[in-house]
Length: 84
Image (cartoon, rainbow, N blue to C red):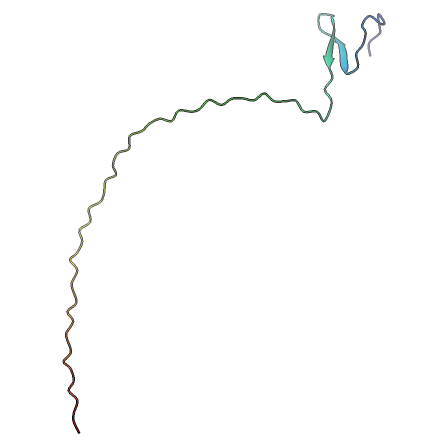
């Protein structure tokens, strides 16, 4: 640990940390306490411009259809009833 050269040069405040920086100046910094979270600055997002792309019509495949054969239905002759 270091030696105390001069006492009561600075009036100390509660919640602050005092230190000697590289140039020999006495500096104070607010002490960070556990449990308190720092507020984050709200970052505004710029709206992203979408690129307009012209769509080309899709090429349709041409399929040749086979002709459909129609079923031929034969009519039945009515059955005659026999008389007794």
